[in-house]
Length: 368
Image (cartoon, rainbow, N blue to C red; front, side, top):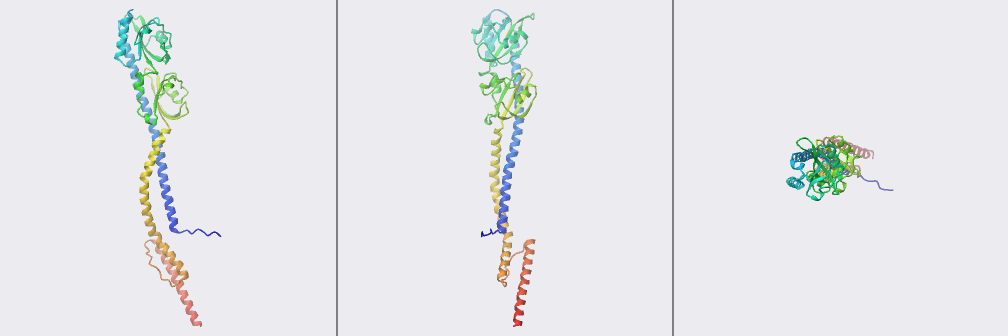
């Protein structure tokens, strides 16, 4: 027959204490990780929205300055002359005095390039691109959608019309931004401050085509199926958790740059990036809590012995009396109510038991 496990109040209390402390530690770690994770998620959403709004304002200002610069230059009468050399010199001056454009050219009202910089080889080329046709047709300042230009590069065209003193249309002055090369747009948008946690910014045009992305292979991809892109193309600002076109969960903030470009700017952080600081927080809580809990455990263990040992001694005395009735009572301090009452009850019972035994022995002697 299997021998039953012998339990004692000391081990039961010790087990309960250990369970309570380990449970408290686990609860502290889990709650700190959850709270940290939730706070980080909210912070990333708010920060990304704020950053997107700041970039939207900066982008609007950038393109506003581009158009202002070209508009001022378009008033120069040199563009209405047939002197391509003079026009080229003026274009070179514009290109060198600003960092806005990768190239610049003047197109006459027939759609031919009258002069260009820095590449003069394009002079006389008849343009039939989307951006050029739109500029010739609308005759207003324009920021084109991305398209492949005569150079074979993916570009955006920023153009302003040129009129003479009589208001007759003479063509348009245009600067280009090469989307796969270094440009003023990248300088503004490529300075995201949180790259260490895989955050990044991308920009879409009014059709949902990516015109800026840290991964240049993504440029010109259409992502209008993305829920955040849909929101921002409606002119809305906000933030939300979203799954991107690659199936990755993101905390995204978005804002519309609507005053000139009609673009959407999205700043986002991968959801997985939140777990690392959350786990680091849990680790710090653990390192701080363990020494404190060890101190509490040792202190509680000492207190437990002071509480339990008198009860153990009392139990040992009660057991001893059953075999040795004349055993003297040990000194057991009754320093708390339950122990005091238990001690009194046992001593009364032992005294009664010893009296009965004494009376029985006396009766036996008299009978003899």
